[in-house]
Image (cartoon, rainbow, N blue to C red; front, side):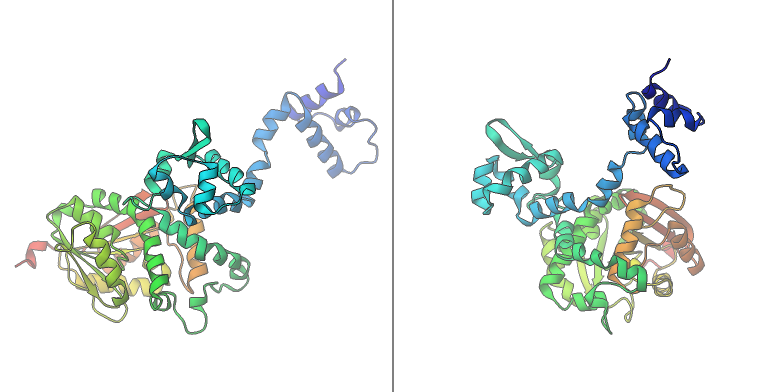
Length: 401
């Protein structure tokens, strides 16, 4: 005769077994409601020697808990970046005590903190208890590296982390949480009046844009063109990668005047001041600079559809026949089942701006076609970012001197 637990395991595999068998395994349960019998069945199934492991993999609550408590791990990484831990360790491994003395950490918390970073794959612990950067941390979290992406993490820690506490209000009211968007303020014009906040923001944008800029430099047909202008180029991540990849090109950044000193400093660090210039201006009120390629990167998503269409039309009117418009942003691909990062990015820009949202690649392509562009294509770049580009009818030779 099967043991009670065997019946529960069988019930987990064949849920259509009689309730009598499940109830019998747990003793007398007469009078239980259907919901109580179901809970009892699930409990016994999770306890089963055979079915427990299978069920825990299928309906493990740990994933829910991990998502809900992910701010724990986020704060560990953001705090490590705030203390410049990874930059410090580029000089060589250090013990827990040495790190504590250098960074002013209390002995109670520093061990668990460092060990958490080891578990997260950002530090490795060697013989003698010394800690060192992993390859990933050395590449992306050392401020001395051109590949440093910590700027966006610094921005997240100082700005975005608290901004997301406004998500319930966003759902209730549709209004952004950012103080720059309250009253008659507008996010970018307000931010650009604070030099220190602007520098932090632009550094953060470079952290986002560096990887995708390298992909754009490789995947867009730059060989057909000679000049380009990146609208809202921030520090200049895209112009730098395009110029380094394609020596025949000269380019420009078109951004608000307050950006120029930060941009020039960044461009000069790559020795590209003779090939990439800065043009001050406002894309809303001024004319766009003439070039054979005009790009908008992480700019349009901060505005509503009407403003986006207006700027796309302005770019079309500015481009010569045969010129191209390139838009790169955290766009949602409707053909993909999973768009988690893109969806989160859309919520983030809604928390930042009044009308912003992440469009789908299909929406963006439609806007280009309806503005007159042909041969419209879209390509996924890296992470949540995709690019959509199209060509103005005609040949470049029709306007070249």
